[in-house]
Length: 112
Image (cartoon, rainbow, N blue to C red; front, side, top):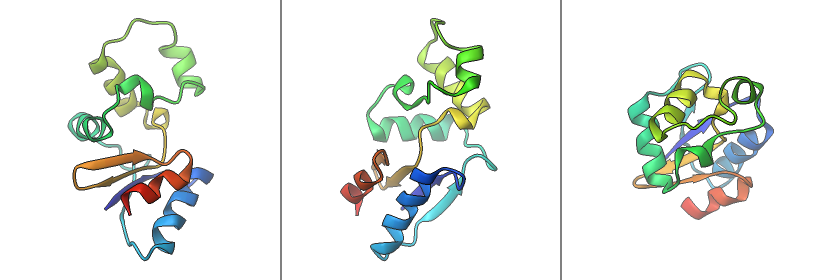
């Protein structure tokens, strides 16, 4: 099990705590310090079964300043999240071929 984690985010910390409380020791990926690749993010989106735009944090300044109100392709949105990792909703938990966005954090229990 993997958690794409931002330690500065309270929801991400809560999600990690849910996993640890369930005796799960996930692989913790700090995607802010170690950005994920286009291919990895595409795979996560496939497992989440959502379009890229649904994973974007649209209130982030970088989104508003650079991307808001632009007609972007799926590829361009993924590239934006790869270039600016803060744009990704968090936490994301992946287990085998399934994934959830931990918003609210209790959604993570679906994978445990």
